[in-house]
Length: 299
Image 1 (cartoon, one colour):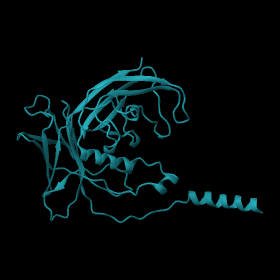
Image 2: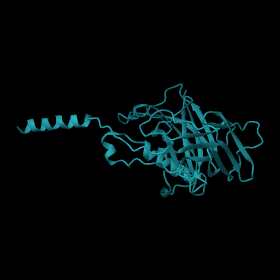
Image 3: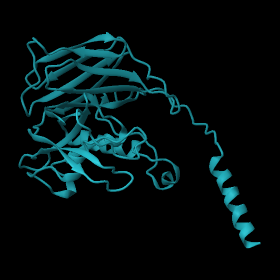
Image 4: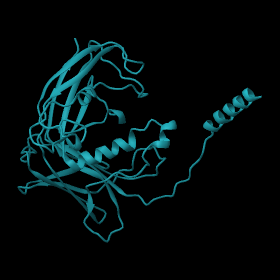
């Protein structure tokens, strides 16, 4: 009798786990989204202006045309971004009279659209040189870490606390941009409280340039012929906090773990509406980065 009761309970529980629940969310007025991550490379720079959409809407965010987008540095030089396609505002620094190049310079973003004006500021911060890229053969550790070649980079954080970075990895020329590939550092460690300054980046940050597979359940080792290119982007402390919030909101395994996860919420923004009485909301982020990169192919 006891055995039958246990089996019956397990069957009921399994059916309960498979039940689909439709959640009706309250509609919120659309807000503007300004996605403005630009850098000091001589490549096309873009600012995206779109609108928010319903939580369960997985379509491409609706673009916003007709905006005036400028970036002005602390010397008074202004960069004009032209709309190259709906919602995409671009500037090509190649051959221009204005460049993003001097560390410590402050840049001011201004977006004028539909009678509203949005502004934000960012400073161009220093970034360390990547000393080397290397591949290390490792035996199988567990089902999530199979045998193979693992990539890593070596770089040293400059002396002086408060530097923050976004480390990006490209495997065979493709940016690894799954949520679990998001790799940020405060000085040479994970966060400000680590007090890890002026030394080589800690091993977990170095190792994070080896990607995960699409199912995010195991690391994908490199094989001969594969290439790895690593970029370190300098970001402001505000941008670091923003990306930390993005990590919390996107690195979610689902299932039972969601019971203990942080609640879903909007992340912070450094973009503001100049009219405090306006009911029009804006989200997104503006950061100007210095970039250092290095690559290597596994022979």
